[in-house]
Image (tube, rainbow, N blue to C red; front, side):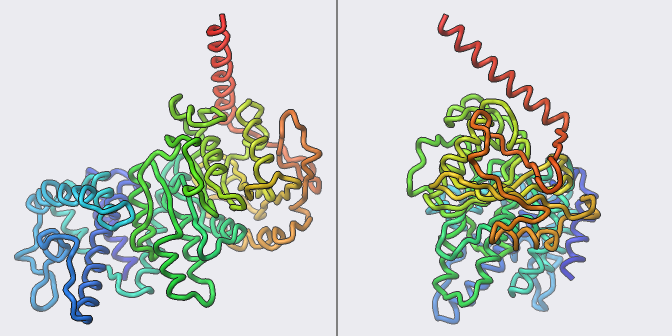
Length: 484
């Protein structure tokens, strides 16, 4: 039933001129889903209060509740077509009254972890792109069919929502920023093995896939107490996201997975000066897939000791700084990070090896990220002691990866098993850091069991390195001129 409702919603959105892509479909579905969820949450809390003989104070005023404007019901429990808004009246109410009202919640909220703050953030970031009130009425009717009453229903909805995010990930070259393959995330979570009571962070949260999978992993641990579940809800997960669409989707995705008031902040993580990060800001576990190939402005680069325009390299510095001593991380990054010769890459590899134990490098095949041509590796490291030995695993599912042959959990089973003991195999080997060239700190994937891997870089990657070297040269020349 839910699957058909989602299909009907997409069919209706395709008729709307204001929605041109899967990204728009996900965004518009998200705000409506959020309001339907909020209504279900409020109704549940109202009934709980009534059973305890207490009065419940609703978050939304009566006229802005789902049951009033979106789906007013008659005595028979069915939609009351006489009082349900439609056409221009519906569109004008949503654009002129509903969105401004919900946007104002940011000022009313007592803090960023409250549901009120999330309401204000979400409706301050996005706009209603469904310009036809008749199409909007059609979509609302389908959304109203969805129920959030049981864990089974939430579980099914979260799967359907994940499928929508996956479609976004396939909708262009930058899809990887919205969708990291879930089998890869699950493998990363299993290797890092977070524990109840640890604080888990993703500073490039995207659609919150890492936090959702970590939540699923932890809530399925045996013998959890009520206190453990409260800790998972309120004191475990946090994230930051720069892009408005990803921020909204992250909130909705975490809610559907069962986290009522996700602690996601809408901000440019890299605008934070590393020197300002204190012990109270640090985390036990970091799980992330920072955006590749982005370029940050000079003023943002000033926040980092190793200055570079490459977004992923700035994020890696941020993650190292944000880890507590003994903290563990699993971070996806372009494989060219291991061998690039520009000063920033060399300096960053040196920092990583000297301040952390980079114990594992998972080399992912091309096509792991659908819609993105870059080859990636996953870096697993622990902060506080230098690297002595790096264990490599070259993932080879034995087939070409793509939309019809995506990565699956079985592909990663051997990696997870061998990693426990850092065992050698035809696909895995260890490298002693004493043998690494101290001039370059080159960490290239070179499988001694199958010959040296030749990394063919894409034209974009070659151009990126040329641009990085040009920027370095320009900086040097600038300094020389200053001295002269």
